[in-house]
Amino acid sequence: MIYSKKICVIGLGYIGLPTAALLANRGYDVHGVDVVQSTVEIINRGEIHIVEPELDTFVKAAVNSGKLKADLKPAAADVFIIAVPTPFHEGYVPNIDYVVSATKAIVPYVKKGDIVILESTSPVGTTDKVEDVLKEEGIDTSKLYIAHCPERVLPGHIMRELVENDRIVGGTTPEATKATVEFYNTFVDGEVLSTDAKTAEMAKLTENSFRDTNIAFANELSILCDKFDIDVWELIALANRHPRVNILQPGAGVGGHCIAVDPWFIVHAGGKAAKMIRTAREVNTYKTEWAIEKIKNAALEFENEHGRKAKVACMGLAFKPDIDDLRESPALYITRRLISDGLDVLAVEPNVEGFKEFALVNYNNALEQADVITFLVAHKEFKNLNTQTELDFCGVLN
Ligand SMILES: NC(=O)c1ccc[n+]([C@@H]2O[C@H](COP(=O)([O-])OP(=O)(O)OC[C@H]3O[C@@H](n4cnc5c(N)ncnc54)[C@H](O)[C@@H]3O)[C@@H](O)[C@H]2O)c1
Image (cartoon, rainbow, N blue to C red):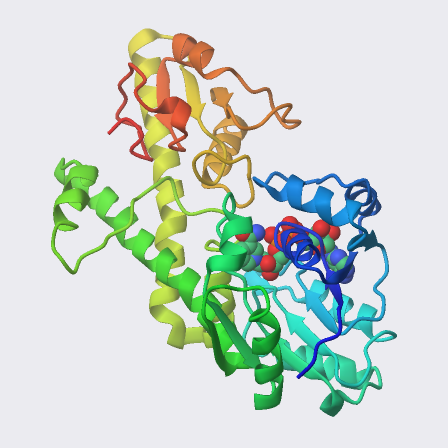
């Protein structure tokens, strides 16, 4: 199969922009599309609107060479890659509205022989839905190659992992799988594995649910260890010396727009059959509530002892260490709850500047002023601090 050289990437966020920039640097003509005007303008200046190492160099080179152009509208292409958000509605109901509207947007441009790839993390059946939407809009989908290829990059290492990671490709037909695998093989060094669309969708959800379940196990252990007066970090380190045990680390909950979201896609469709995956989500959510209670109790104890309200330092707001991403962050949720419940909070997040919702305090100042200190995220700045607290939910002092 011979590929012509035009790619249209819909959605220029953490996944779409690095993909578009990588493809452009590999010689493809890339037409990037986003619905946000400022995003389009920034990219067309050769600049970036998100934080990701090396991405600026890739985008600058791609735009300067004329291989990458951003626009508010799609254009004719040989390969369409959809990389738009897939969050959930109220009640953890999957929201594929962005996928549907991105699919509708390409209708005027798709032609016989084109490849349409859904990269967004998607509930099982979404790739078929893409095909249905195209059909409803009058496209003869038997002449297209439609496939799902979930993205599994780690933020902070996206440019490297886009090339090195193994990929899973599942087409709506074996021919679609084959054509899409051939496309990824032109720029991926990892192995590109073939399956069908539903299995590819479920594989991505499974990967994130596996991690969520393992972390839930660690979080449950942390609550049990608190009850038994055992150091959970030591316990897990010891248990992990078993050659076939690998327990992940507990924390203040589980956050981010992937692990805290994707398992719900399985639960929503699986109902009662998704018992363990649902329970893992519930355990991880409960861990956050448990942490809030522990912090409030410590503040109350201080108040009873000293006759004044405690100043509580919340160390870290991001959903994991050393990033500025606050999406679905349990640390941010805890801090918000403590503030709304009337506690006197000193919020610390060294990776964020100018937070609008409440004032942020430098971590040294917070530690000096605080009566109660809680570590919520294991940022590098917090390691080796000369301080002690029983409220170290992320094990940064260990
Ligand atoms: N960020 C990650 O680390 C990561 C990893 C693996 C998978 N994913 C998945 O990839 C998908 C995209 O995630 P992301 O992190 O890039 O999201 P993002 O929010 O960073 O970017 C999505 C972009 O799509 C744009 N957009 C929304 N609707 C659009 C439309 N109809 N047409 C054109 N553009 C549109 C938004 O303006 C935004 O710029 C999601 O399904 C996510 O779960 C993300």
